[in-house]
Structures are given as structure tokens and as C-alpha cells.
Amino acid sequence: MARPRSFDEKQVLNAVRDQFWDAGYAATSLEDLMRVSGLGKGSLYAAFGDKRQLFLRALRAYTDDNHRRLREALAEAPRALDALRMLLEAPVDDSPGVRRGCLLANSTSELGNADPEVLNHAHRAYETTTALIGDCVARAQREGDLPAGTEPIELARALLAAQQGLVFMSRTGLDTATLTATARSLAARLLPDHSGA
Image (tube, rainbow, N blue to C red; front, side):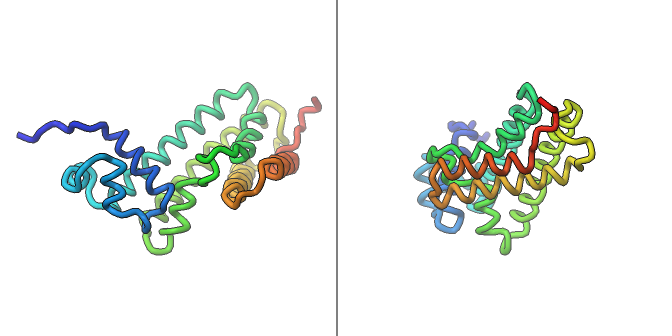
């Protein structure tokens, strides 16, 4: 009879996610994964498979969590236009967690050309993100804050590209004031208020 696991799977996935996020896939060793997870090689691989499988599990968990949080943030905003502007301002935060960028984007840059599964995951994840933002754009149109003639998915892709650009710029060490000004400039161009307010 197999012994029950004596560790918190989510806690382990979060620890290895942070290791991959900070160091990247190639620079993360088995010893790093054992250290951050607190598990031996046998336990780690028995529970999650090899390094690549562990990475993919952590990446999927990260993406699922991001989609959940984005869905909640967009839905909870009193007005959709405010939620869309918030999306552009999110990367401006100068805390270390934000400055390390997006794990999905980092991983796609590192592995996308060599690992079709990572590339396919990134494509699906960005399509889901685009759809969530597109739904919010459509809501802003219904609320009268964006012009009805705008195609929601096209604007959603532009917003996502702008937001990811800000994330990348934040990784370069660009100061918060400049990032804030850039985010506001993008918001003014991409999300002009058409409500007449």
C-alpha cells in the first residue's frame, strides 16, 4: 500500500515555480528544486515526474492562477473601462515580484523555439487572456465608455501587447515614474473615454 504524501502539493509547486521564475528553466538544477521544495529526488520525481514535467505543471498552475485573478479583477471593477486601465497600470508596481516579469513570457522567450509544448501552452494562455480582456472591452462598450464600432478582440490584443511591453520595460529597471507616464499614455490612446463624462 502506498504511503500518503506528507507534503502540500500546491506549496511545492509554488516553490518550484518561483525557482524557475527567478532563474529560468535551464539554470535551475535538480539540486535547486530539491532545496526549494524540501523534497528528495525520489519524492519529487515520483510526485511530479522529471524536471520538464515539474516545470510544465508549475507553468500551468501559474497560468490558471493568473486567469482566475484576471477574471475576478475585471469582473469586480465598478466600470469595465477602469478595469482595462488597471490592466495597463499593473506592471508599474516597482515591487520585486513585478520586476521579475511574467513567468509565461519569460518561459516562452527561453523555451518557445525548442519546446513545442511550451509554445502551444503560451499560445492557448494568451488566447484565453485575450478573450477575457475582449469580454471586458465589450462590457465597456455596453456601458457607453468605449465606441461600439471597436472590435473587442482586436483592442484586447492591443491592450495585452501594451501590457506585456510594460512588463518587459519594468524588467529593464526603467523607473516607476517613466513606467507610470508610459502606462497613462497608452491608456489615453487605446482607451479614450467616449462617455462624455
